[in-house]
Image (cartoon, rainbow, N blue to C red; front, side):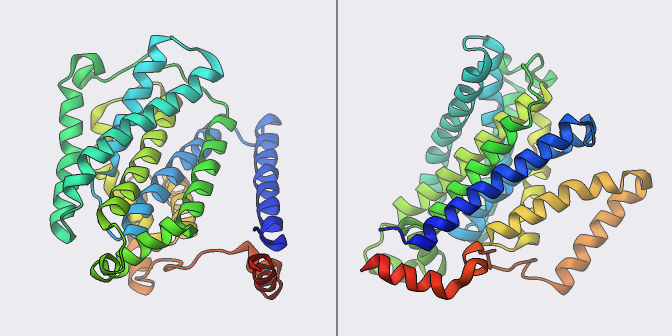
Length: 326
């Protein structure tokens, strides 16, 4: 049974999400946020999904994945092909494209996850890096994807709501999963795989599911990316793209979803703020990352999460949980 304070937390969190969207949408409507910064906000939503989904593998599961952009590419091209076909136009087509992208990424997630997750450490990193490059090369050599010339003519949408609410949904799903019984089983595998297996936890099942779920969300982010830009090229999703998202996860703190959100927002905005400095902006960008990692090697938040329940009064929350469990 859900306690009163837990229910109150969910209601307040939902209300804050709606208020945040209303404020941003209002600023867009009156022209305070121009089209350029609106595109940056859309890119932030996509990067937040990618960073939090990668954190599910790297931080929660404890497995290094250097090919996460490969799942994004699969989702982007699957959604792009569907949207170009024009079979289901409008909002229904948009949601269906997300479903198709997630399903396509899930299939590859299972096919890759089952054999690959038997490895660990450097070996796993190398194999996932190879997977990402194989996906990119395959896309470049397939005729129906546009080959090396890329895919153009994908219907686009500039509606901020179509990017904000999927991002909010993914964050809510990841937080729910990480705090669930299944999430705690994955955390135990991260901390001590042998001990978890001896306690009766199906290690292969939980590792594969977490890896596949991460792939599904990456595919969803790819679908949003395709419909944001309208043009796709396979070289966009190379290993540098995967490294960018890994930097966001490490900078925010591996295992902290809140940290991944903050770092992805910051690292998306920072290059744009530094753009007037021309060729020096990437040097300054790199120096900031180096300084942060020297003085905060565990990341901005480490493994900690921002808790609204603590702000509401943790003592009452605990008491309510006990009463609810009784």
